[in-house]
Length: 230
Image (tube, rainbow, N blue to C red; front, side, top):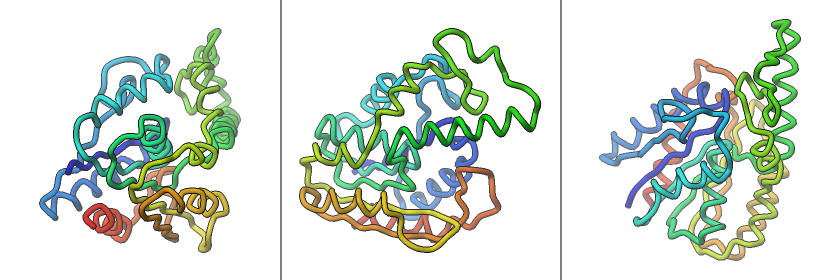
């Protein structure tokens, strides 16, 4: 069994780095290896973010995941990409852990644009150089307009209607506020027929992908490890 971690995108990748590091350490403490990798054009990987597309991200994950039985853990867009991989390729994934997944891509893009407008106002800069023809600026990243439209088109609840595998799901809502989230509840309900097992957890803790907090990830990393090892 291999354990694979899919990072978020944009500034969420940077803010969540410490979490992924601690998650890796939690797996290592149990004698397991959690494989982390950077998509082309992100992190330490080759290429430019301006060239990132949904197709390139899919290729990056497929090249890492092919050939073995897997447990995939994804955070935010990384969870969405992992879900897309399972549904689209009917891939042999034993368990899939979706941490605060981006369920509605259109809402996600709108959220990124609102964050960018706030940054523009605060800094007095528009970073117009990142808005060449065919590109736009999202959180300081020169992002292809085609890729933005692809992100808008992602909707996990709709995609769940095409899901036919029998693997297990852990879906974790992470929020500063307690209680359930309707979109996560709807996604979980849509998976309960074809999936082998669907577990939903609600954790009240800082949304650490939005900023770099001094947070205790222990409860979350232990839940992920326990689910992957069942």
